[in-house]
Amino acid sequence: MSLPRLVLSIEKTKLNAERLKTTAQNIFTGRTVQLYYALKANYHPEILSALFACGIGAEVGRLHELNMLTKMMTNRVIINGHYKSLAFLEAAIKRGIERIYIESFDELMRVEQVARSLERKVQVGIRVKIFVNNKVGADEAEIRKISLFSSPFVSLTALHFHLGWNEKDLMVAQQAISLALIGESILAAAGHRITVLNIGGSLAEASAAPNQAYNRLQLFSKHLPAHIMTIEIEPGRYYVGDCGILYAQVEEIRGKRVLLNTCAYGYRLTGATPAVDILSVGSRSHANGESVIFSGHWAAENDVLVVSNIENMPHVGDTVRFRNYGAYVDAWFDQICLDKTIQHELSHPFDQLLEKLEFVQKGAGSILIHYWDFLNDELRVLPSSQYEHKLLINAIEKWLYECAPPGHIESQLRLICADYVSLKRALRANSYIERVR
Image (tube, rainbow, N blue to C red; front, top):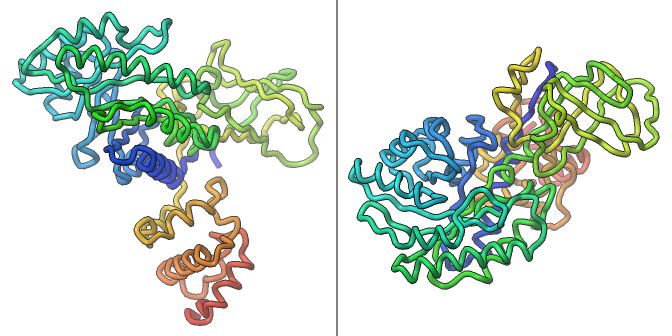
């Protein structure tokens, strides 16, 4: 395996999308839920295709991202970000995007200028500043200034706030939506009807904070006025952060500092601090629970990752595996400062099962998703529930019947299931193995 290598699990990306969609729809009952994906997190074409196939729209922040999207990929696009050039705004409005989020009165003037020149009416939302020290977003005074503006080419219909994935205090989340609703009352007093609330992305990977999305959405739902009928959510790392595994090689040891043939840790960690494994052979020297500093080739002081309580010291030539590396890890400066560029590999066996069986419609999809081990691309155990067991066995039977080469049933079973003996026993009880032989 050529290193460094980034392995992306397309199927886990789909799982994360379906999980968030189900969670949000169950919480915001009676309202429309619109999910978007922040392209800046990871714009690998297959990641985009997988998410758009799940009905997720796109949140873009620059012209380069917008140009990646053809209308065949998705026609659901919103614009967000701290700076939007006139060229970007013109391309977005010509395309017919759903909404542009602004952060100041001056930015609203630029949007109106472009919309007027194109004779197009644009839906606009306001990003609300929720922390005093924030450098982005409109504070109460700015919202009042915006509320007094009127134009036939601009319709103010939405509010947006961004809490941050690493904010764990639900009281802060409550403060954020309270500030957004103060902005809503200011706009309503000036005659603007706000019907859309964009609660940002701000979600860590589900594997890192499994209850964060549910708890936040549940809190927000309790404070919504009745006339807010549409909820927009636009995460990036939540969909893809735990879908990537980065493999790198140890090139040199300097005391407790381990130099790798990759770069850009430190300021580019994902929501879940990467789980680090040293994949090695032979005897190892014990580290006695001390800390090891992993460093890449980027010449910066913060290009380090400190791993505490490590059991064994790595050696030159060892492979180091960093899980939770699917978001914000693949950028141009990764490549220019490496002797070898990062290779990509896509993981697909679970995806093939989903596509072959249309699992989501048949009910077996959520069951298979629940029991599938995405790290090892296999089923670890079979469900104990009789109903789930039967659904899943029938699904696997069909997949084997359509996909397995004659005489290779057992090798296919080993490929997809760690509990090979139990699976074989279940299939034999269904007379499947004998039938296809």
